[in-house]
Length: 243
Image 1 (cartoon, rainbow, N blue to C red):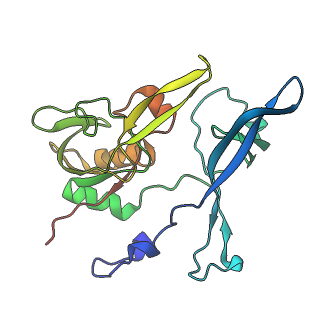
Image 2: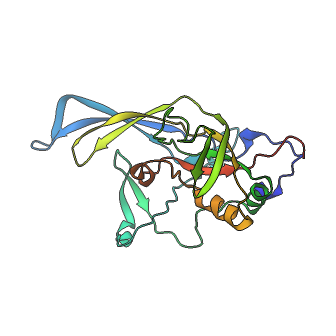
């Protein structure tokens, strides 16, 4: 779709992509493992996403499409073959059907036209697809020099502007310590950073830079947060109003 849109064409944002997935709430009760019966006053609720997309304005059941999650795993020695079949997914351990992908079902690559635009303008929009943990002060901006210049994926860039929403509070459960993790305030998904490439990087270096950031965790974060999928980024073009 990106390759077929001209600069003069009007676009309705609500018609692009998939809208926010519906949320499903379930009420549970804690079970006593000794008696296999419910414990008194131990009700709790879980919240999850329903992976269905219905593009029809009339919400016809025949138009609904089931969605799935595509994951990229970069590790050695993992028994990934054992993940085929039904296994838990997520903090609430809901069962999900796991299927090993193939090279034909690959993570989408950045559009070639986008790479060419960034090569030409040496400007880009850095967009967060998931909340990010920027270990800096203030916490919603990347750690940088007083000149607003910092290193990002081996290239020097300058932060010109940012559009950042309200922080999101994230916690979790520490399986090793068997205790809640401390709450943290993260930069929300959808935040946009307008950056300019510094110096004179070559065409090939800019292409490698785009590919290194595309749908990967922001390298400005702690290593553990990168492994957990925080700060996934995509890039967008940022061109002057008149060219």
